[in-house]
Length: 234
Image (tube, rainbow, N blue to C red):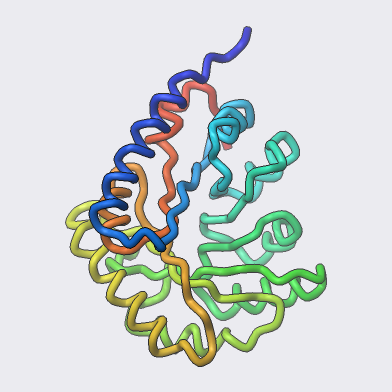
């Protein structure tokens, strides 16, 4: 039986249209924007179909699932890790992802640094911020973001590119605005030690608003792959 992935075509068309409208309305032509396909529970065949449509950035949430699928992915798509990451699992992804977006502790940053050096790599990272102060989510406290960046900026093997967040679903517009303010403030305060250019926020329900508030990576899973009728259980 051949899977029919034509629904992804229509979903991606809608995403590109909405993202383009938000970009044209709120952003400068020189700004960048990338659509990330979040692949949690999605089989490689569906992911590869999205890649064939021009998606060139994939987001992985779970180490074990990623390891089971990565060899089946088309090689012209970049893979970044966006999920909660334990230090003892960094070694499994250090040689194949281009960015780790969920760095929220000195210990994790130091582990990434050590393993990147060991593998002769420089790994881009984003500092995850818990902008809504939610107990259920990881991330550093917004007020400590500048100090956190200062503490890890000199680590070898890593390059701090910016910030990532998952705002509370209610009043996300408010928290997206606060995140933009934090990003701009930290970029200015730390410009002598890091060059911050990446703000990753916005998912299926709020990516248009996230673009309004300066996001240049939006992470879309359900909006692209739908109900995920063909999925991997982990």
